[in-house]
Image 1 (cartoon, one colour):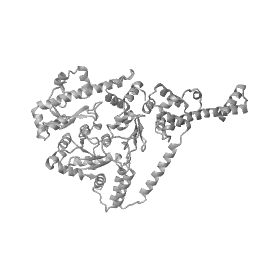
Image 2: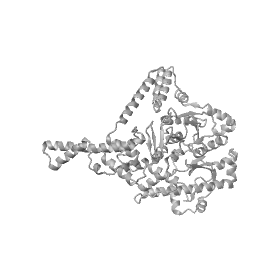
Image 3: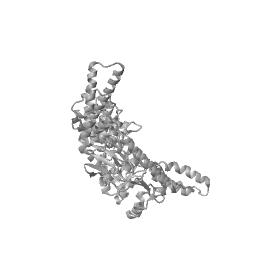
Image 4: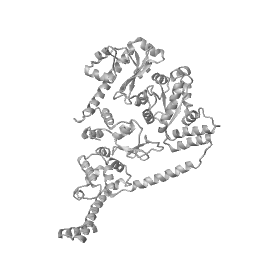
Length: 578
């Protein structure tokens, strides 16, 4: 990866960022000694294996081995690119990224994003003011049962504006207008007149997880087709990644016990108005794997509650199939099947909050929903149908990462079609235990140079113990050049930490080796790390002498030695005897 942002800026950004604070806004950390711990967000973690070090500005999971600095965390947790993670950190600290001169595209793209954020926020505020001025739009919301508090909380607006009205109020220049046309934020009619695509619609602002307005959903209050439209995708708004209501949910609840996924904006608003919390929508589009990853970062249970028509039932089955690869021993899904032709908005008005809470409590478990649907139309008295059932069910079951859940579902399937394998679970547990032992054994075997580099990466301050590099620079030991390069960085940046140090090697050929060494459990108590490091340096020097000694002895047998080489080998022998 070519560096497109100045190295000094990335270092400064990491220096400004406290990884504890960054992670703690997303996952609740608990102090444990000098480190912080929690259950790992990247795998099914029954006991807290996810450790974050303030001193190293580094996180590491002892279970799945995921690790890295603040940038890595945003890349893995928020599913961001490297550039996007830098933009996120820069936004948190309120600083501008100084893109290098040769990265015009990235610089322009970044500036365009900032313009879009600002413009869409201003447009949203105009929409919100307009809802109070337009009697028909306001009445529409009140007639739908949406109260004033919800209108304010979700920042609902209305567009009756012509584009000229917007352009005048926001002082938009012609150059920016062209960009807005490219993004389809505005449109042109047959007469080439510009207009707002949301004109005549109730506006539901869509926010990212940080609360920035990034797009809109629009609902027609007249007979304009289609009934609902969303903003076109831009470089800040991607429908497959955005979830309506998640920002509002996270404002009130850090870690909800479940998240209820519904189809529409008004479904979300009406349920929350009736004290049914933890509700979101996937913008009316089908659920995507990106949505599922995001939702499972914030809860352990997703409950799908789609409309009670055929389309809603089909959407529920599709949601299950897409979610299967993300289900684990800890992460699960459930389903609420509403009566025919009902949706969350209508049912909450008819039944009230208590009965809807009962529907949530009695929501259908994943395994029950899976077999209820997979058995639909299957004749279990027919061997052909049983064969068809296994052919259809097994590939879906095998999508689930958790071996325990796969075994459980296969056992249910086995009972249904009359096949059982009672020894499979015990065999799995034994194989997994042996596999873990083998992995641990391999990980503990380190070369002399790997140990030295590992200690330096984990403790950059050890560089102060290296007074002279004379004995190292001429060394033939494999890996010495890497050690010397790391040593140089540590000495150039006296207060560098592990997270910052690894950032120098992002995209290099050796980054994976260095990351592995950065999480190596060296089993050395803290008080003895310096002594161990010095001993390793001595051993490196000794090994260099042994290599030179071996070379001189070999030369003596074949060609003989000069007087100076004889003196050298005498000196080496003397040093090695000490």
